[in-house]
Length: 342
Ligand SMILES: [Zn+2]
Ligand SMILES: [Zn+2]
Image (cartoon, rainbow, N blue to C red; front, side, top):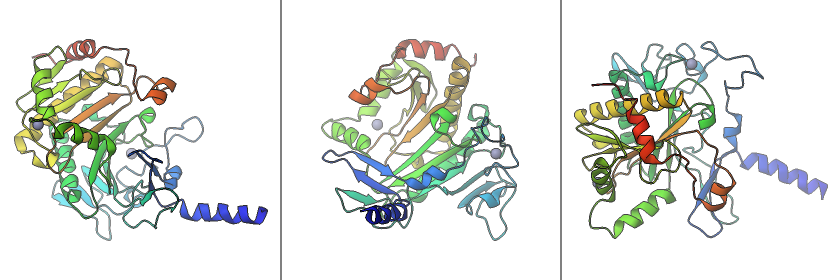
């Protein structure tokens, strides 16, 4: 018995390192088991370990050898790729995540219940060469380049064999899930359409119009509008799960970032900067996540920003229903008051 359990634990260690997508016993819901991610470094635990700085930060210029070779480096000379000698002078740098939630060649999954191999790609986009830079401080040009990188990386994976969904998201601040403080974005591809998007598509299938175009039009005329420009609107949505949640929607129907033209990108950079600055100014630089929802076609691109102000607790976990203590109408008014004048 003791012998058996020892062998089991060895097997477990060997097989559990490869990511695996496990399906709920009977619902169309999934979780990803990715033990490798436990080894991620963190520079947030300053009390326990020496504070990390530019010298030991794997995302800082000069430390490129601490990360896998890049797949794209945005420089003054255009988009390049690392050769045997890594590029040291860059504006943004994209490379595979060492602690991936999805990998290109996973081992076969567990045979109990239903599991899929965690087949996919997981990238880090280092948004800025400056260790202490904040997305809310990015210049218009810098934000446009970041969106260009998102467009490029999305286009690189969209339609690739085995890629059903491309998730692009930012975790800002430790509480919002960032393990390193140096500003970065992540991209994870999935071999399935996530249930959340699937449910949206199901709801949309019986409508004769685009649900998001309709939301954009109606919210634009509501007290929940925070800002708008020629291409985009920023709203505190009627259905807000968390205090000061905001959504950015294109006014023109488009399914994904790759469909943006130069004007769209310029306007999105402006409105995303507005959103991040208003949130920082009003809420004292809170941790936040932003998530980009998009599909290859038949979808309406949207970006959701959720500041991390309250914890997800028992009621939310027990019912799936969020309690939000700030009415979105009030959130919109407060955020509007932080917009630059003029
Ligand atoms: Zn750094
Ligand atoms: Zn639409």
